[in-house]
Image (cartoon, rainbow, N blue to C red):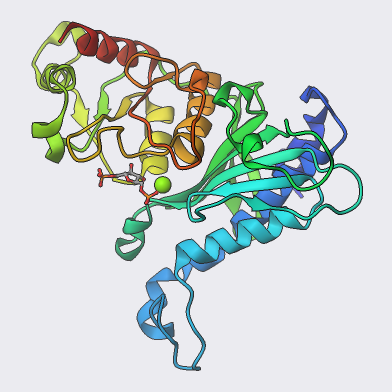
Length: 334
Ligand code: AHM
Ligand code: MG
């Protein structure tokens, strides 16, 4: 292989000493996620062939049931993470309850929470979708399967988090609390290769991402902030550009690289916002902060929120530090 190319697995092993408890388990776990991502990617790439191969959720011409992609992605992650011996419990946006992993040999130290296929309403239109993951150390005592208590830790306790985007190319971005790095899948060799080392997000930028169709239901401060984004002012580089894919992981990734703010505020229909604290907000808040960005619920830091339940939703403002701070000011003053 070209000496300049660094694969995800090489990078994970090189960085293993960064971890507070470097036994190799977290490295294996991250590498298992990388493998699951490649398998999910293969299936996502076939999504356009559903009319030929059979619709997801129906029976194909061979009489086999074609699994819905989000269920498929969920199954792949659960099986990749259950077999390695590092994970004691998982939580998934697709499962009502925690998924306990039966105790094997040794001590299973880690807890993984994930949204297996975020933005799944975009599958049918070939827009980007992704997987989001979040890793914690176990807090429950004992060596059997982990418990719901292990899953309800605040985001600041994460030891790793990241996401995969199945887009024009497939990219895996992750942090273990020592910067953010991105790896693009080279399909010819089937490896994620380091393509975006040490990602830093701009402090100021000019993209705002929010579902403006809900504007009538926004809190007054958010309405005013959106008006501000659209106002004309040379000194502050306005009007800003509006960009919204409707796939959080893809909107987040674009804004991480280019700078910008993503907001999913409380609305009359969704008074706590729409996004999930454990599977969406926490992992991407960890990545955002590690890249020099900011993530709050409009007032408090996302990573300091103590979760009360697995599928809890949270209002979210995330992205370029100064943009998020200004949006918070608009909320506080209106
Ligand atoms: P999902 O996890 O069921 O795909 O839903 C979450 C998605 C996010 O990816 C996206 O940011 C949001 O829902 C879009 O919601 P809306 O259509 O209300 O703007
Ligand atoms: Mg989602």
